[in-house]
Length: 543
Image 1 (tube, helix red, strand yellow):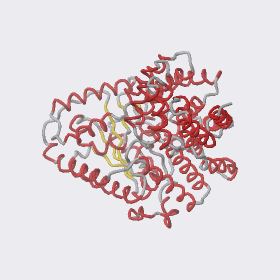
Image 2 (cartoon, helix red, strand yellow):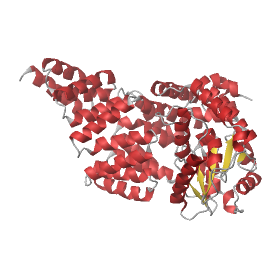
Image 3 (cartoon, rainbow, N blue to C red):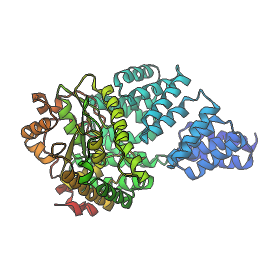
């Protein structure tokens, strides 16, 4: 047996034993002794990828491709490595090349779709999922891609059927994870936990799903084994930073439930530090945007004739900082028989962001009318005959001026919550790592201050009937009068069902999915006091 063959045999043995880190050295030596072998370089790149050695995985996979440009698996793994390294454009290019080389490689199109969806490009993502499903319709990856497209279109019941069909013949970790999250969104928490735990057992590098598990219910002393497993997951060398961050958040939530706020804050701080290695938030750029919005949308702008006429369905925008009660307000309103929940629609955040980048003046009436018509078409596809549709994209607080000019009949509900409670809740919550948003420290303090400045401006320049403040503390301490004000502000007749949002059986796809199933309560008011010794920079927000 040649030395290269011996090294490859040793590496294969270690890989079969689930020890990719121990396979790196023999593969590295085999690649040195057989420098023109694309398969060895691919295997080295894969072992390094599974071990978290991205700096070695990427050149090894690139070397395999240089030897064999039509090595589809090498392109696929290179895309995965680039994605883990945060090189989004390079990852998408690698996935597309893998698909070009081997059209039946559904995983490449699926991963491209997943990445596009995480970036907020829903239409492109759905198209990628559809292509993946069409390329391998009778395979597990193809069926999972079809389910993912349906989930992106909020067709959860159809997606559930496909995922259960997959799991009837294949205990696929992705299918288990998707079904677990789907069930949690539907409020079926105990069933969801079982599927999510099975997904991690099947694929330990999905340990970030512990975050979804602990948010299915409160954690108690009986969950000691679960906590031990989460701590053990942090020792896995191949766990990606985004997954590792979610494990820290899960451990923080568990410690919070158990009353150990010092340990909880240590875990939340660790999660934030990891997030900051993935994406950086530019506070100065955000503050400059807020300044431009205030300077652009003056009272004179709103004195001009409206760009669009009222239409149906009527939009209700629910805006504010994340974790300020926006999900609760949507749950209350969508409990009304004449209201349909739209969830977090990206329309105005995308339009506003693109407009802001141009540095152009306020869009003219024709452009606003076009966008209003496009948006109403989207609402009609959601409404199902309802007269009102909610749009709970919190970050639309930035675009209240644009929204009012385009849709003067729209009600903008602004959710306010004590800033320190809001900031602490943000610090404890997972946010898409592809989107630049601060989750702690001075950056979050600066973000909150800029948000407050802009909303004070909207309050001064927009009609009082169109920009309505709802205070979380008042809503939770005395729901009845506040909910009556809320429904009246939207032009709705009174419905007793709005007093019981916990009975609303709609799908909830936000981190508040468990809280949304509980009766209205004020237990979260003043939570910051238990964390006071460990607030750090967030202390600036203490009233």
